[in-house]
Image (cartoon, rainbow, N blue to C red; front, side, top):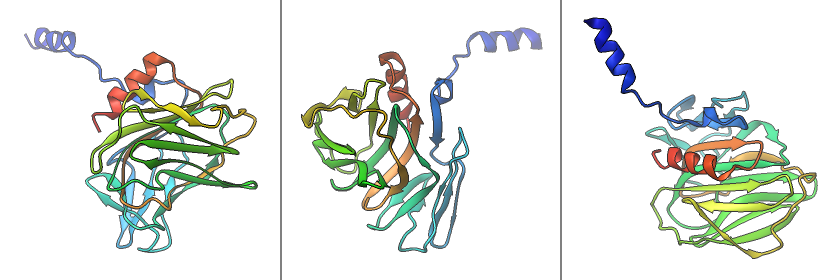
Length: 223
């Protein structure tokens, strides 16, 4: 009798898709998982795929805070540093976030040529710079204090694309192509992000196909 019940439950079980099913997954920072903090704020957000943890130091003026498992950057110097810089040619960088006002959000990275970044410039425009800067107009403007998912991708041919809430943004400036030989040098999350809440981050070492991109958007939309 017990065996039959167990079989019925198994037959009705539908597995939940997670980013761990992506073969190109490099790093995964999960909401409410692998996080530690002290009186000054977040001290660690540990990578749930690899070992490239995010670390917070420097006191209250430099450390974001935790709120129900999300990481909140509420001052202009708040940041978390990667244990090792992310030097990527092909990549996908996806975040589940919300912001209280537009501005310099997301990841700042510095290399020998100056400052590169990925960020949400305004509620209607995203921006990415890896040697050259590209601006992208969003298909739908964002609202303050509302969760959304944003993804930045660079394919093997150097094509750079931005997706927000499953919609591809339109290139507004630049040619949208940066050779993968020009590697990223991601070193920290935040700074000068202010009024930014980050729920989850998924980083891969290639661009996504349409099927896996849809699965990732569906997964992140639940966070």
